[in-house]
Image (cartoon, one colour):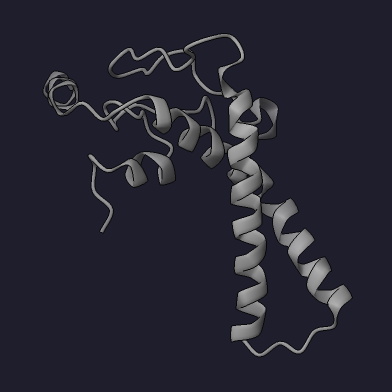
Length: 132
């Protein structure tokens, strides 16, 4: 089970990297009106999410890696399920999966990038939990 205090919890549930309580994004990743927009600060602990103006440009590199991992996973799943598809059909399946998962991949990539730079703070998390 993924518990608070692990980076994986913060990444997969799109929570604040420091307190794991506040929301990381303004809205759900699939809400296209505010597509993967990161909040300025954590609503719970006040952590400023942007260290510098173009901070999340680095998440593009992470996005590429996550996209490749998703593509490999889709290919392996087609093999596991015994789908005998041609090269073109496999390619179309992978592209379709990437298009459908694009908002999630972008959101998780930004969360991974933020977790490289911000650490979980047990004291801050405890303080936030007591104040609510």
